[in-house]
Amino acid sequence: MRSADVVVLGAGLAGLVAARELRARGLDVVVLEGRDRVGGRTLYRRCAGTEWATEFGGTWINPASQLNVAREVERYGIPVVEDRPHQIYRWYLGGHEREGLPVTAAEAPGVERAIVELVGAARRLDFEAPLDRQDLADLDVPLTDFLQALDLPDSVSGLVCSMASLYSGAHSDEYSALHLLHRIAQAGLSPFQLFAGLSHRFERGSSSLVEALLEDAAPDLRLSTRVLAVAERGDEVVMRTAGGEELRAARAVVTVPLNTLGAIDWDPQLGDGKRALARERHAGHGIKLWAHVEGRQPDFAAIGWGTSNLTWVSAEHMADGGSLLMAFGYSTPELDLSDRAAVESVLREFAPGVRVIAVDFHDWNDDPFSLGTWMAWRAGHMSRHMSAAAAAEGRLVFAGADTAIESPGKMEGALETGMRAARELLAAPNP
Image 1 (cartoon, rainbow, N blue to C red):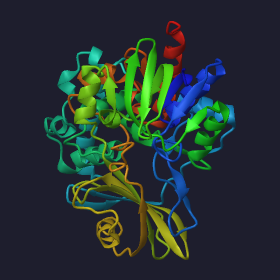
Image 2 (cartoon, helix red, strand yellow):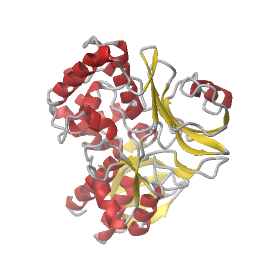
Image 3 (cartoon, rainbow, N blue to C red):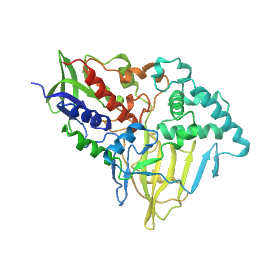
């Protein structure tokens, strides 16, 4: 006998939205989640050793431009707050340390040229269509190669690389220039709007949205249930779990990250594009850490490139008993995030003299249910496999921020694809 009409793999934003929409149409839905919690690559909890609750995964939104986020915020009455600007900005680019503006007046023409070239290339994109259906392979190269061809001053190319790495969680050698151009096109051809556009956060954390979706969807939720195999058998999808259970449904919605597809035995095998993406993995291997430090730090944000594998350090919470710094970068074997002294050493490149009390983080790259951070398209993948990532296969439809066309890697993209997957499934012929 069938376990449900639909089985959803993954209880992140995409899976919960899909479950809600399908349940609203009267379908019986089971949601399987390998973790012992819901939320996927969002994670809001107290920072160890402090009273501050912080985001360890997805954080920033913009309800003014992200229509799916705006819809859910309005639907559930979720309060959001606007980020405040920091009082001090420090830049470590091209071997120089500056405060205020990132470049000198003499380097400003290089910034102007970089903007002209980036916007000019971005004009070629139709960001509402999969990029593998457009003639864009010449732009699907490592960002480093794209910038080298422009012969920019070191500080200017460092500025672009630092911001791109911050938003991708990858080094510019790995991250595709086409993905950055896609982001610029989506931001109205404004590089400034791209970097300033994600301006809000959920006042009570991303869990406020996750909990609202879960309560509304009310599916049959099974946590700590890892799926090992998915097979199509006639008019059914059969899923086998690590606990030996078999679940049967007419159709399935797959929302697990693309990097984890290879950990599941698929019968029949997934298409060539999905297999290539699972095998080669996307480039996002970012780190996000929180450091409880001594003393009341100044209200600063520091951005760098070529210093360490960190690209951003900022003071987020300050009190007489200490401060909480947030840092972004990309993972390397040389930096052990659990080594307090090692973290203190790299933080001092951005905050000289800082003394670290404790460090807290979630290692998404070692997490078996993500095997990476947010979606960062690797050079050569977007122009070949973007359609394949989102394409339905047999009785399976696919969702998740990794498969988003307009907003890959963002919470907006997860919501977008959860809605899309529900529409695709509901439009399919009855089993």
